[in-house]
Amino acid sequence: MENILDGTSLTTQFESAKNILGVSHAEFVEFLQSQRYRVKMKDGGYYYENLSVDDILEYFNLVPEDIYIDAVLISHITPIIDRESFYQYGMLSLKELFRLDTPFKSFMLEFGITPLVNENGHLKLLVNDVPKSSPYLDYRMNRDRRINGFMFNEKAEEDNNIEEMLKCPEFISKVSDELVDAWAERSRPSVITFKAFINEIDVSTISLEDHTNIHTYFLHQLVERLLFVISHYADPRNPMIYLNESVNIDAKRIIGIRDVII
Image (cartoon, rainbow, N blue to C red; front, side, top):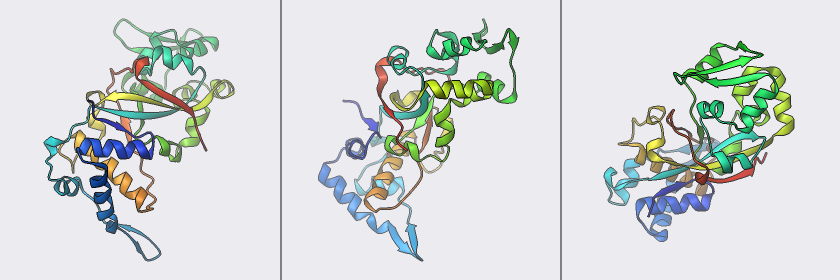
């Protein structure tokens, strides 16, 4: 049985945490209740006494090697032109979006913009047959082509940059102002949830300084999130997860697509 960190709802978060820890429902509830003292009212606001991953492991008599997560369900916000295409192609890196005949590529071609992948695997944009370049585009096409998303689905809309995410993908907005309104008119702001295996996640983008490995990092984020919920502590954090450059998510790993709720 896979240990999957499912952040799509509070119910699935709770189930994931107890399964990863290998404890019963009652034992995990008892643990959360025992830690509520960490959230206190002070000077008219909330004060949080940090819960560490060591605190969690010691309570259940576990060591870091006992914690293993096979996969994480990640939620990506973007305005989508054709939802069905995700169930055909999956979630694609920028390189694959340039290479395959997807709605993304068709949209670009309609406006005289040709995405290309040359024989060396480098990405290139032609606007009316003239190469298009800028510091942002060059960086995205050559160094940052990865898929990303949020750990907690129901908090995705709380991100400070949500308004920028709803009109059109950032990459398209940097190609031409003309594309922004056209994409916005045709698209539907959506949250796509997909399954990523733990070895597909770019560990270099995660701060592991207080954790033995990526497994204990995710466990800590999950348990802390649930403690905040039962303690009515408003915490805006929703970790952004980045996949490795070469990773594409096949259509079978698209868990669901929902409307953005503002």
